[in-house]
Image (cartoon, rainbow, N blue to C red):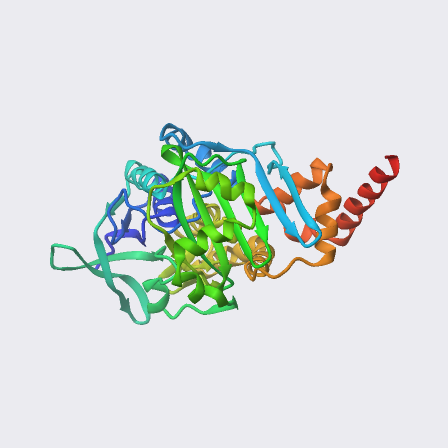
Length: 411
């Protein structure tokens, strides 16, 4: 039986809809399916960091995000509560070309924009569609078996099936995708939305074994997420609202702002595993959280999804165009992904443990005060612009500490 589609994408949110859109724009026959309907919400960090925003602009989709009333974010504020006293620094995460704007759109808005863009590009999108299993022939994936909410079973065939169906990916499970470089869950978080809660840009507050972050989003709301170590999740869940609010008391000025605001939606909780998966095999590929996932503490998931969709689309295009073999193109996709993200993945997994800051780290943060270049670079780690390997390289640390010594000597 001839394949009706070049590619079937399972999952149509950030990674899946983007992959479908990019492939359709190249002229491929694409079917994207999702059990959800759009617009709909999903658990999310919300942040599209500057590199992801640059891609939205490149794809012609940024205007729609802005038109939805999504406020721009160009400032990152960090409030560290050290034993010897708190330190507050604020910087801008700049890309090499100077672009520095991030956004934190609600997923009801962002995902709908992406799905509509995939359809406009020529992809077929089936919402409210459940994939029951993959179709195999001689050990190769050749399609999907599924059904609509109201309809009988259907089988669709394709040259390639892409799993963009998240951490619990049915595609990854069906093909037994090899998982490697795992790290355990590090923190448990709850978030909600608040009206009349002003923030100083993307605002992060770090206290011993606790962290929270606030970011402005659509409808003049602020998304506020509070995290505890995973080992304390049962205590957190025993009194979600009480523990959420009591945590904020560790920074009284921030707590006062929240108590003057109004919570407008229920709490949403999550804890996330850290892993890489081999992202390809005979007739299948993985992208987004299905392929690689890290703790949300660095808020890079959406940006990673966009970037990986571009990487995968390029590899598929090389294969279908005959420039290289499927295995060679996909192996290059895996290498590029791992090389791009391993450093920030390890950094994120460490941060997610919410361990007390070392004396050396406190010394470094204190030395950064007044050094805007260093603060901006530190913010750039959070935005996926600066590699933690480069920032925490001993030569860079010595330079920051040395600048601090010279500044104090001048005064």
